[in-house]
Image 1 (cartoon, rainbow, N blue to C red):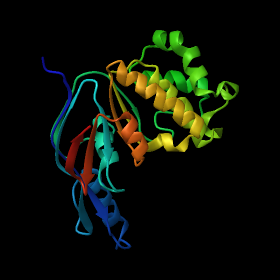
Image 2 (image 1 turned 30 degrees about the vertical axis):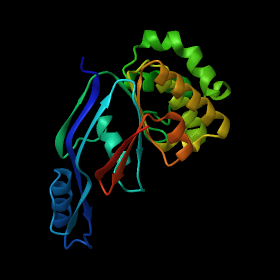
Image 3 (image 1 turned 60 degrees about the vertical axis):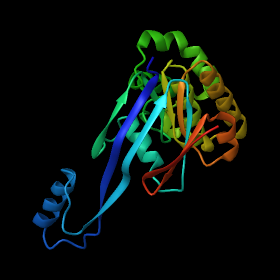
Image 4 (image 1 turned 60 degrees about the horizontal axis):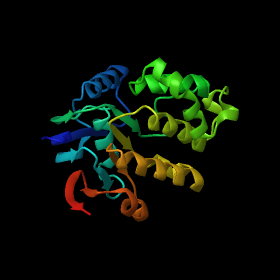
Length: 239
């Protein structure tokens, strides 16, 4: 039986770093803007490969830690997995629903309240309104932000954002959870709560991919560690 839930084949992601000086005219500036919007390189741009020919297979129930120095391509890979950005080349096949927690505030509208954002974020993660209403109390209880539920989230601290965002992601019954290092924003008590929740999800057979610089978290959660170096897959270790 094929239990591969994510099949990453030769994924590359290219960006262009602009070094353009003051344009000679508005026409020149607009021309460069349109060129970059089309994913093309202008004469003053430097080519930068955030990822280069990454191939990786992830099986159901694995807890994969993505590690590497800042700028190694970890977050870029998670964004491609979550369909936030497209790859420049290569392909990814995903079997199952992904719930992503990438950056503080992702999937939230700052003018909406916490209550409203639960339904907005849950819908973006593929959860129906009926499911969200059924799980609403559990989401709020886990987040610990009940007192501020009817306050626009633009007034939330980063820690409150993370609490609510993680709580929604943890209660949508996704097959795959993708988590960048946003949990480091929360306090120690909530981090411990999230780690325990992730451990329970892993035991239930869900697949987890997370970015961390914490060796303790790697040792506690991961069944495999994949190291990225300058956009390339450097090594894979199985515990």
